[in-house]
Structure formats: structure tokens, C-alpha cells
Image 1 (cartoon, rainbow, N blue to C red):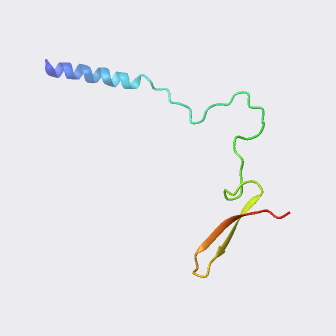
Image 2 (tube, rainbow, N blue to C red):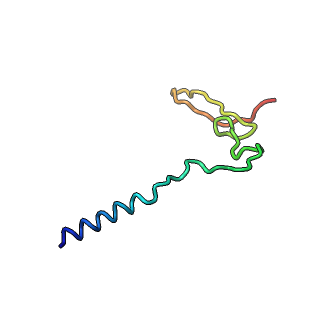
Image 3 (cartoon, one colour):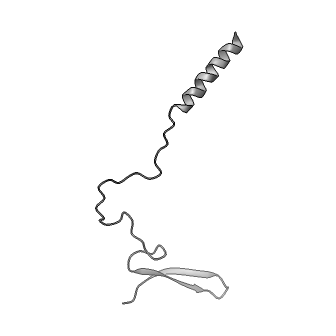
Length: 72
């Protein structure tokens, strides 16, 4: 009796796992996108618009960097 009950519960559980078989999309579909401004702004090395990263080695051999404004 106990074995039959566990087998029935296991079978119902396996059938229940297979029911929601439709996977979610990896990225949401943007219907009606008109090609406007992008959602993100690409910048140079994370410094922001109008800035760039300046790199140098210090006297101990370690690399250092900082954000400096672009020259026009």
C-alpha cells in the first residue's frame, strides 16, 4: 500500500514538472523599436563622455591610470 502510494505521488510529480515546458526568452522582444537612441552609451574605458583613460607605470613598475579630459 505504501509503495503504491509513493509511486503514484512520484508519477504525478514527474508529470507536473513537464507541464510548464515553454522556456522564457533570453531577451525581451521590443516591438515597435524605431531606431532611436540606444539604451546605453558606450564610453572609453569607463571614463564617460569627453574623457579617456591615461595609463603610465610608476617608479615601482606598477600600472596606474586616471580619467583625463579629451583635448580638442
